[in-house]
Image 1 (cartoon, one colour):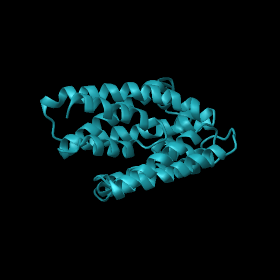
Image 2 (cartoon, one colour; image 1 turned 90 degrees about the vertical axis):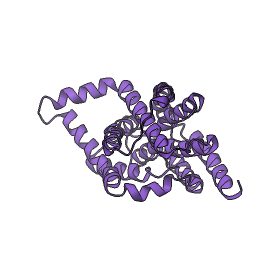
Image 3 (cartoon, helix red, strand yellow; image 1 turned 120 degrees about the horizontal axis):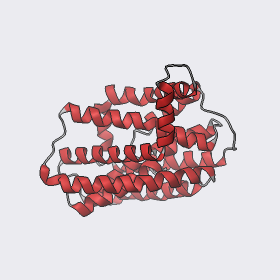
Image 4 (cartoon, rainbow, N blue to C red; image 1 turned 180 degrees about the vertical axis):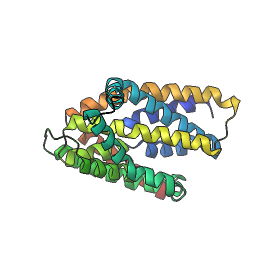
Length: 264
């Protein structure tokens, strides 16, 4: 993999992990255009590296929240931080179930299935539009809503369904405050990403060559920096109810992807 390709894919991952346009879908489109799937093992390792970079950028943006949560947990008392952590765990259950027991069945959707990506981008567009049309409230995330948001995150494992778009949209449609929706959406995915990274490395299925270290490093830095910018920007956009712009974008890209798969 060339360094310039790694940087491009890193920027795509960093931006689309937080912006509601589907990082997995855009990575599949990017790989198809750049031809970066020649070596499946290398592609898997690179994807893992990029996801770790965006998880790290999330921790940096929400470092105060994370420290507060950890501080509260180590008090070993039932407090606001403990309650929030339990809601995070509840939200992880659906996606964790699929990741542990149905991962092999999910791989078929990540094999250059550009048509699926296009259709799922259209679904993302609909979710974003519905969220922008929802009324602003001050509700907190409840245990029930945490599980429903977790179901949305599970569905977003399909390439083309934006994870942030699906979880934030679902939160807002459920009547949860938009700022709280964004915060919960970004924090709930960190344990899953870190768990997936650890699982992939421990599985022994990832091949690493020292010759690829430069490209991997370049992609990691690009994804991390782009993730910092995109996460900060996305929080502001959710507050300002400007998700419709991304709905239009997903609609256009989805139609292009469908056309590409049929006639390309």
